[in-house]
Image (tube, one colour):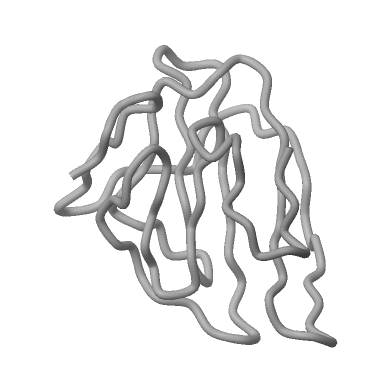
Length: 118
């Protein structure tokens, strides 16, 4: 269980993927960076559960990010962590797509779930 109110590190951090506002991706270890995002920007996550391997692609203001995660588990949850008091977020869309919108971008890198990232 992760007790974020105590600022303790999540005990299950190896069971999550985190995309920090500075663009850093984290799973078992710190990974490469995607685009930094700021207040007011839209951050998107597309989860493709139909392809092998299953894949998570990130978007900032509808722009596909180069680093994505493959081999995710067959069952997932979404978590959002808000750091600053009186901050908020809004889910603007949650839908099932017939086909992935991820096209791949120049310099793309697949990060494998369960592995250490470099």
